[in-house]
Length: 250
Image (tube, rainbow, N blue to C red; front, side, top):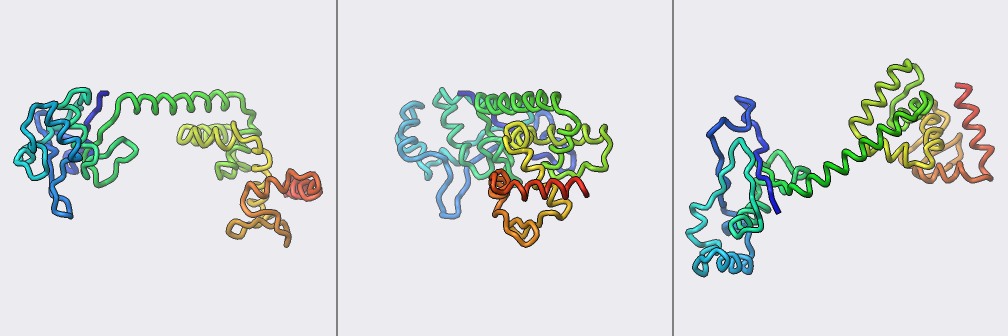
């Protein structure tokens, strides 16, 4: 496979990752236990020594090999082909290096570099783009009343917002987190009940103490799923109608 090695930290003075023709060198270091970091197990070291035709012991942690071994990283991405022995050595050396994030999702303030599996990242990007497309297709079919209800599930009180602002605010939330929109609206078979609960909470018709929900002095559930199950139960329809009535009156 092909792996991308990329700088992640900008220079605080210039705002640049690197000037042209300037480079970092990712090298070995001593761990807290006093061992030299190589990224290789003894078995993998022997295997790569054979592939690279190095003398036995060349890739051991105490070998002089690691005194000068480093991977050069500049402004442009470095491409590593892990199907070659050299590329496999570079990849394993970088994979668990404390200064290197193994994937974009694992970048932290402590990491200066990231390694990216091109195929895996492309798969993730395609899945995210597909979710966004599906979200906007659903968005196009929503009525303004649907949009107001959906905003409530996002935690936005929309009663006093104009129609234009409602549409714009929902668009902002979908753009920010299309997966959440799919989860709380498109794929949520109980979204109408969820809206009732959130609306009732905002108007103090229902009360919530930690995870416990109250209607008056009566406990109607622990957690939103429990409350929805309670309200869907036919024997509790009088409670549901009472809550709806109070919502409409306020």
